[in-house]
Length: 279
Length: 293
Image (tube, rainbow over all chains, first blue to last red; front, side, top):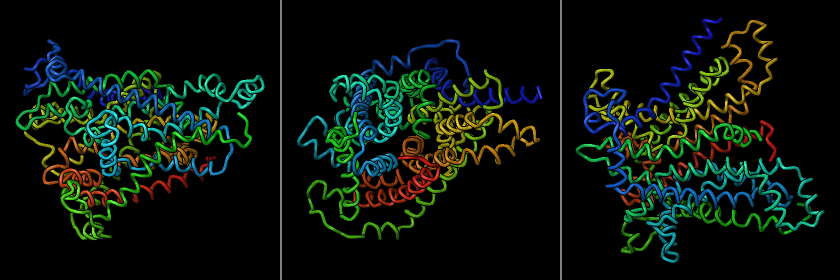
């Protein structure tokens, strides 16, 4: 019995190591000196860590700018989509009205729509809108914010609904009896109580916008200044020889913010998922 | 807020409705419209008028053996990824329940980390690990010079491995949470009656977890059916001579590389319909599990 448990423990640790290994390799290769990267005998450690690759990525190729672009897009998406989703979630849980169930099911279906299939019409939509409102046309960060706000919305509404539902009705009724207006109830009572839910929802929206490759690739065609990280990274793939050190450094830069975010909210994430899944 | 009839919910729903209407419903309508038009570079630049061609994009698509080849590849690739993800995820979820605290923590943190890695970074890292000459894996097994991307099946296999690596954590974490919610007494009773782990899994956990399993399965199908980033980056847009194309990448290439927007839209519609069917199954599963809307 004890031996069996030991073996299972060992097996679990082994799987954990295999799972984490690619990430370790990515970070390791990012800090290896160029000579070791080009080596035909790669070693799983380095004795001479260097930040050369990061310097190359950040200074020469202006990755700071792309990092900032990615960050701005993701944060705007988180804020706008969170706000809109909060309002919708309140409407869907605190009021009974006609078509309520229909709207809920519509949101659920929207969550399943393969957004990738919408790339073609959205490309033309963004192109045409750009003629009227230059800020959200092709080659702008605004276009990315716009589509990702929409894409993250159905899931955010679905998830926040569970959190708003969990706040007892008596609370806002009491506040109303005390003379609080609708607006006050919304911002002073419900909003602070839903904050943990918003945090969990934000993670999903952030990651969605941060990871996007397809739309960045489709919308940002010629304006190099407005590229986001995933696209900018492809610069280091060259027909003759890939600059693996730089690719790994850029990949690391792209991964670290999400990784930190994820590990911090690990527990809450599982709880939130459970809420969204079972609820 | 009271439940009297007011216009308040309308105002609260307005922003969401506008955004979703403009960026989901309208583009879906446009997608359908484009798929029945002759819409290529000539029409985009305004050189030729847009022409309604009815089902021509579809009939040409369905009579193209390439399309069927890509569709078959997509379905098989997705099926293989889903099966592997579920097997690994479920197996590790059960494993998590039977190990000590520290290994459990290590495994769940490792899985969370893999989950968090952006698809682009994951793809590039695995590409480097499996690089022809500089890849650690090739060097470890002494197969330097072996290019994983030349052969159709090894290329699909490698991309599939990245997809599974990135998506098994979701399955593992969700199922583990589900298993933990099963009353301990039920599992104890089973083990007192001498049931093996295998039997406990199939005859006790699986039936209790059916609703959660349904969600995990459908969610995986939807994800794996529309894998884009990994294929696009790792096989450089569909592999040698397009041997690794899946529907998603195929539609993208038709539209944005060949400027066959109408044809690309038709592929998009086909994809949408297939996933809609899966979604309906999902909704039925939800309803059966007693979900209240």
